[in-house]
View 1: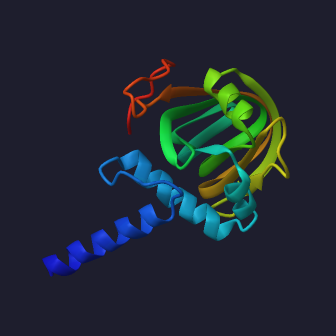
View 2: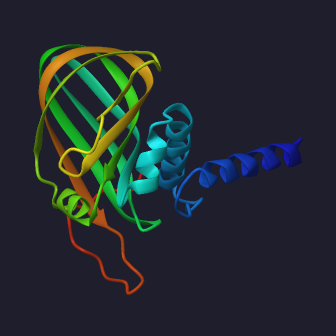
Length: 193
């Protein structure tokens, strides 16, 4: 029984890390969750393949939670991938105001068309957005139809119920991981999951 259970766990880890475009550290929970999210998005959103093939880099948020009733917000943690390796940790925070009610959880990937878009993301500038949508259970799928100012976003609903017509501000923070030389680019710290 124990051997079967251990074999099953090892198989799941191999499948999760195999879905990623980078070598996932199996001891890093956030990286393994991000790899699993990439696998789900590739499977359920066929349009994501072109983004994965062409993007300079991307940020993966395996779990973002949104709550709203008049005012609301969202938060999630993720990893940033560049040149086939994890280069940093990132956080997403959003505040919303408008007509909204509900709660939902989703996975999100922010694709960067080129190096300039990724470098701008690393600065953590506040972005203002308008959004409208309806998400029921896992049926909520949304995306930008093409790159806008070097960025495209895909989301895949995990669970929840949310209806909204809102204006929001989003903030991304970035913390670089040490490179091969052991140096980092100091940014706002993001604690591991």
